Image (cartoon, rainbow, N blue to C red):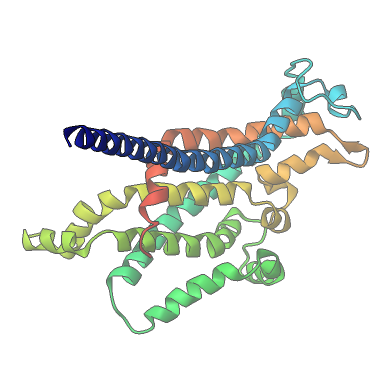
Length: 309
């Protein structure tokens, strides 16, 4: 009897050991499978991000490559992806072919003026829409969205006739007013999203402590709104700086901006691609410098208003 019990005990222990080993293998394989499945989607997203980066960055690389290569290589029917020689002659040619600093200065005046006016007016309008209830509030919000849906090309003739009647044709002030028609609505809508994300209780607590409504906004809301102001300002500056069509139609050659200035490289004899790319590179410097100065605030501002709207 004791022998039989020992045999049964041994067999039961071996069976339990075998089952536990099988279960351990199953658990190990089950744990490894999701990790493998997770690894491949992550690799796919990384490859997709790399592809997007290459597609978006190749034009910038080609602009720099053409700007620094000799002019004869820029029109080579079999161009090289890698730079074969570096030269600064294209930049000298770009500065000599036409006045460069005049158009750049006018573009700076227009862009900075548009950003300053849009930020001040847009912030006040966004504050009113997000914090106060008034009759026609929804109509205003729908109107802001509707204005952004109108193609800019469709407004060229009406804008031209209106500015001509107001004696604002071929003036920088007229161009500033025109740019505000499509930059200001976006500014209002974007800043509204940032203000809505700021809890109203913070203002109420400040007013309980003795601040007026204006003081609560200046001391509480405005500092929290700074990243959104920076992100919106950068967008408005880029829009005004890169705009070409209205600057071409509403300004003469004497008052042309930097984007129109690039057209001087296209003549009846052909296009000087290397100097044009050199001019485009110089035009990109203010945008890059601005982004480098405000990149931290810009990164915070791009995500701060993305939760509620």
